Image (cartoon, rainbow, N blue to C red; front, side, top):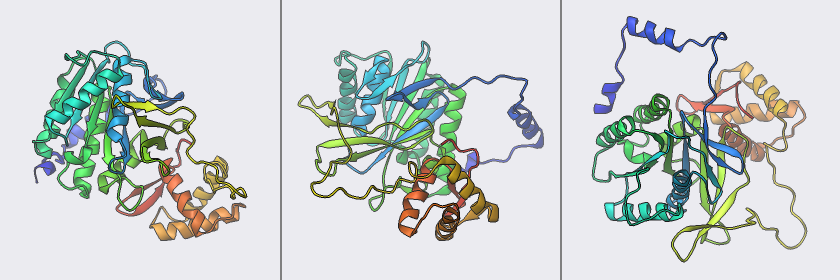
Length: 358
């Protein structure tokens, strides 16, 4: 297929140039990535990186991302999102791959209303592309041209990253589009936020591209319907490199705009005797305990399949005083993946990331 053309070999001379350009030196200083998106003081987006929102169908992912864009246009706060874009990075590019121009226009008007801007005329800081009718290959080329030729661009939304590939389970295509995101964000020093559906049967992002997003994204936001009230959607950090934030929730008001629900709690207390506190591997196990156990496990082998990893973790954590069983090992592995302490590569193999951010 055409996408394989980009995986071309380079000459030895080109490799030497890239090698020299990639070397770090303690004699040089390197700037910290500018922080442009926050929730409750927690950084969810920086220039030079990308993030994602995932959720089931009808969980109101697009409404949530509309709030992010509105905050960027306002350079202020919308829902719990706080945007801080510097001069020269104020322009937002919104790419929709799924909806018709008619429905895209409704999203565009909603964003402008949320940002307290006129919705009867174009805004100089918002460019909206409706790419439903194009092929994945054409979409990639259109987006690339827009990113490299739009002055003052700071934030890019790709609503429907799944439609940038032909096969959502193709390792080659998934690697290619994620590499594109990393290239675009680094070259243009922008932030890209993508949207992807979850699997129907579990909470994982869909397909091989979902695995790649979890492994490489700066932040992965989870948007889901409240279990007791389907009109409410909650937002939490499924994976975040920075400090985690308290989940928040919103509903759609009479003006068809997302509205923050103050004082929202993710779990309501049930009557009767208090339930035993749910096992939380992040709060109930220290960073040092995680590191000791993981170094012991991966000191024996460099990579594991899921079942053998589960068995090895139970044995290792138990040896340092953390009693685990198979039921507790499941959320442990999920947490280790979300915090990118371990990553899934080579199909189903898991490897250790010793330089993890806790």
